[in-house]
Image (tube, helix red, strand yellow):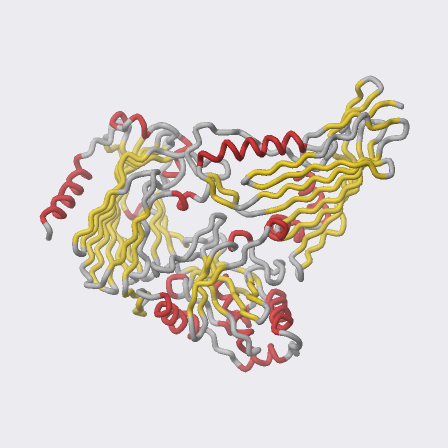
Length: 628
């Protein structure tokens, strides 16, 4: 072993047993905004062969207060290919003295997802220690051994929000003879130290302060520095493969995970034939997709190779359920029976965009969708919902790439990007002001794109539940006599519509003989706290455009003192316009706001808030009606 590297390992191990875990020894800067502090987090990974990897974990974490309890539970996932041993747990008081010990027999052994998983080969050992006094520390260690070497964990500086890190280190001993590819992503958030010497690797972070989950920040992993890893050759449940090129990996994926469960049986072929598919490819895909939706439902199924292999298509056909893998592959096989090629697509589904790295093949993704190429462009199918529209993806699947796999090729393909006007809310409202200061409103709403996603839950509610949901949405109006009608989900065009009739009390105010009121009732003013010491970037998760049209009937015996001036605002974040006109004795207000998707540096947050303060002020425009 290289002498320098041996010294690092020796120092590293010695530090674990000699460190002072008294709370008083925590550096002051690590207590700021922290509910817990990772005192030492050590992971040692020994890659012994293509099908043998041993990981040893040693961690000590100090829980500072009740809010830090969510970091106190110990959870050790395993399955039939992962064994767990050498579990040791000690509870330390604020002086670092051991006051209680636990072993493996004290852990609860349960399904990893018992509340919703239909089948689940994944298990979890967990121990929840709850204290009545703070602070205290938990020190634990354990070892796992697995024959699956395809999953190499990324290395990050912190475990979450409001937790700081004193020392965090990773050692990899690659004894397998297989090349381990590494990629380090550095930024100013925290400094990563690393040494790579032959097949021995050492990475560490130290003295990383806690950070709060600030409004409109990206997903945590998006802005953290990190190191990622991938072996050129791997094993997954006894199936060995190559990860040096995406195409080789895709071929392995298809042959080992998809093809064995995708037989077009006579029963399935007859099912497709009975649909009498005609017309264009688009028409056939749409009919098959809506047929699939009508006869299946989503359940989580964690069985098969590491949760990556779908259940048998014939089982999905007979039983009518499956997870994202199973339902997507079932839809793919229906299309295959109809002579239509499609691609099984692995994707990282998240509000922040996470992409496959074209130059760094690795196991990645947490969801599966389907892509169907046609002469008019790609059709994208989300297969886990019975209600979602044809050729529509949730905003958490947009603006990124997928690993698209078919029987004869693999490629990285970009998912759609919606223009602002394709993720819209359109409101047309007639407003009548009553003598008792109440208003009657007759409004029609239409939602598309990402805003369609947020309204979809309404379509599965009964009439009373819809009414309650809309009362909650428009909480800022003093409502009575609310009616919600014609709630529709247009699954052909990804549009949700509904109509609202309501009366809101005390909407206007009397000023002597005059009346003052806000010109646009359906607007909840956004919170605009500036957070002057902001630490995180600003992310607008999707582009959108809202168009509101209000027609206000001026009460008899009153006139508008002055028609407000029209306004236009432009910024790098989007634009806003507010226009007023008088038409047939009514004040017509047209309001349009366009917001653009982007990730902005933290220094831009103040400018963004200033822009939204201006839009807030305009949204709060009031008018004066004078007695004639």
